[in-house]
Image (cartoon, rainbow, N blue to C red):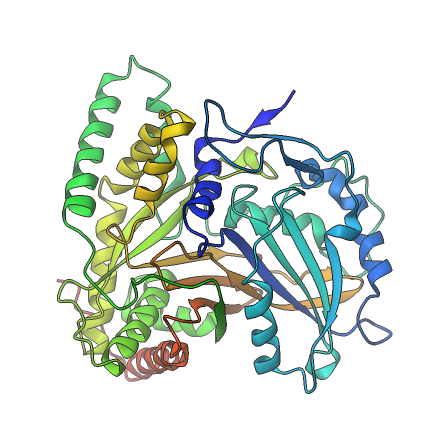
Length: 467
């Protein structure tokens, strides 16, 4: 039987259909050491490595039954009778010297192009020629196929937990290792809280839960829709070309900041993003909005038993980034307060309810609602923070050293920032519209400068006022 897309999955197809500047694929660049005998795997080796592992991911051999949404029913997933992995796995080489500049320019171009909807919606490239003999596996996968957290589960299939693993039956993959940080979303919102709200939709007798959901939806609409996100130069019509940049920071430094100043690692990361965005606005001669910028933050609501269940299991929260505050300590304090308010508020419940309401619309009308969920009126910038594995992973016996994450940007949103931690390292992946953000280096410098300020405060023994 054909498995139809969920309304949320279909939303990411509709965002592309509504505006040719939107590219709704997520991605990652996985950077490895040289192979034990040197160099990078051949294309043939990559094909032989990946193809059997697709047995654990049958949807990666499936295509859309219809390339577009609309009409009276959603497209479904159907087997691609002409599937050939060689159409999805390729090889490329960086120009010398293969440093960060050459690599991010290559990534910018690769991630500026949409996937072919007539084929399974994923692609991968083995990139050789990185500095120090390293190589990379770079992917892009349509957001309708999997969300950011689900893509991590896929990563556990494509990668190994040891350099020389025993042969495995890929029709029976091992479950990903447990998350030592507990079942929490990006801002520490418990998954059970959001899932409990979702459960109310299928149990009409739970009237109190339904009332709570209704109130939460009303609160969300009043606070986040009727009171629009502030006007900003970050929300203008965009083009089709992207710039990709990275900021690296050891996870230990973010932990040092939160250990001294209070809050969480997420607070430290969001405060750094706030500082970076403030730097951009000031350099442009733009007064930072007095209420701050509003970020859309996806939150995972997968249950523990949903590993390798593809599709999207997320809702959205909206957090205000205090770019209007010049003092870094006060800005950190405000970031903590904003995030703490979300943990104890109704917004997660309201966001899930809003998705339920939009999902009840027929496909022919859903496109209008889908665009409204990602309109610049609701938020200025996307920020996603995903906890990756904290133990080393391998491919072909080579150790994975770092991961550069990509989050897509919707129409009239010039910036998306994906933050991913892996094996003690954190990378901020910045996806910027090339036309609207020609000064993306200002964001890089601003994030790095904000991190330096917070570290200096932590070394000086500053304490955030919790009153």
